[in-house]
Structure formats: structure tokens, C-alpha cells
Length: 171
Image (cartoon, rainbow, N blue to C red; front, side):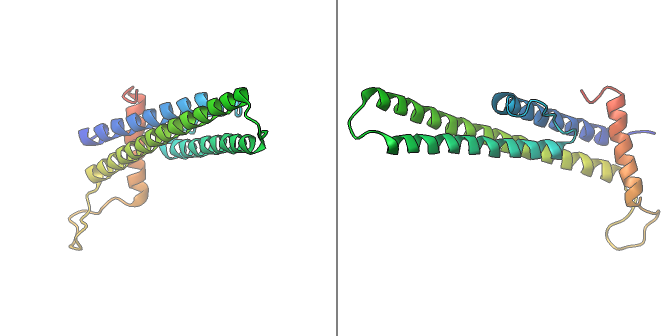
């Protein structure tokens, strides 16, 4: 089967998006969840990876919020007299929470950007594959030849992506 160059380029872009999402998911896991979820495995599709990234960033926020709540509890429970050491410890914890919140915001921004890029690449790839193989008209006029049905289009797209992977073009 001849593969349209645009479809091949779109499939490569889709693979690139998947690699980027996978790298981000693995980085978040290794930084934040390695001990809590030692048997975690990334999903094999971009949408699944984006869902995992979303869940991890939400989990990071919960951890940071719990630490911030503990700091507030410690502040309220302090003795009325000024304990310089306790003040320094609490100040250090507050600074660490602030640093972690900033890191979380940066990770969420990276995850959001990577997700948007990955989704756009996948959308473009599938659109290109569909457009390059759709023989039908979409303006209501009679078709000179029949358009592919949904199952045929799925088979064409899958075959194009599979061919790319088996030819070594996915990496």
C-alpha cells in the first residue's frame, strides 16, 4: 500500500507527541510518585498518558496542600513565647512549601503545554490521514466515487500508523 507523504509526516508528528507525553509522565512519576506507586506503568496511548499526567499533577497539589495545612497547624499550636529555633524551622518549612507550590505550577504549565501539543499533533495526524484517503464529497453533491466508510477509514489510519512503526519511523 502506498502511503501518502502527508499521512506519513502526520503519523511521525503523532509519534513525537506521544514520546513527549511519555517523557513528561515518566518525569513526574520519578519526582513525585516513585515510592507511593512502585508498580506504575505509563499508558500506551496519548490520551491515557495525558490522563495520567493530569492525575499526577492533581496528586502533587494534594500533597502540597497537606504540607501547607500541617504548617498552619504547627503555627497555631506554637507556644505563646518566642522560640527562635521553632520559628526558623517553621519559616524553612513555609519557604519549602512556597518552593514546592512554584514547582507544581511550573510542572502543571509544562504538562498543560505538552498535552496541548500532543493533542494538536494527534488531531493533525488523524486529519491528514483521513483527508489523504477520503474520496467522498462533503458538499452534498453526488460523489464521483464512494467515500470510505468509518471502518475502512479506521483500517487505513491504523495501517498507516502501523506501517510507520514497523518501518522504524516511530523513533
